[in-house]
Length: 326
Image (cartoon, rainbow, N blue to C red; front, side, top):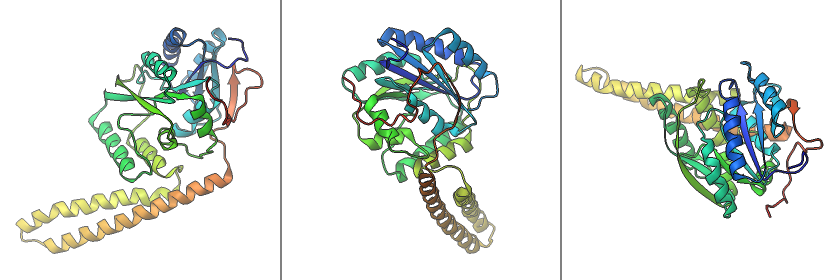
């Protein structure tokens, strides 16, 4: 493959403080891509790492020109930066995956095989994963909320790890979403989608960046397509008030046994529950207002600080809508 030729396969790996994993994941992905694709590129997009990840990326690029790097000028979150990286890929097929080996590089072969057989989207669907009970509960709550209230179905066990045909990437890039919930956009777009089950291991090294707050924020962004803002405050208040209502409701049987003010507790619980529902809807209205404001601003997903190993003249917006795989 010449420096300016588009590869058959692009593998996009977003990173944030992945010094313990980035060299190993690049080596593993390179081995799989060389075995299953005629040509390939690896795009590492760094979201403001502070742990030495960037120095390792520079060293990798100096050795392998097929590895390209985008350094963001700050942390743009786990929705905007990975999606922007996908939009910068030039491959006829594009794979997005994590840097910590929770998305196994060994899935590249099955993904490519299904794509060559005609699938436009191949999503990895985890059978199981190693996670703490609290993290599993948070994910279950977030995805359940999206399934119930979202505009399109959420595929259980699909985290966004998968392969996307060139036409899928180009079409979704043209949507110009300010807070792109990419895995939801893929389902909403209606392209031919197939699932490839896999067993998701734990992280190879380092610590997960996804705590309860991050997962809650991700779920809310997926529902409303919005960034964090004060407009989201009613949503968080609704959670606390709903919890208070449940506590009051749980205290009612105790009050009954002690001949206490049962009806007063039930009345308070009902009042707090109704107030929580009101705040929830106000918060969602605020989310939609924020989304409209972001769209009117036409803000880029990220602002780049530096690029390494990209061919001269590589277009950055990646909003082509008429390129098809031969």
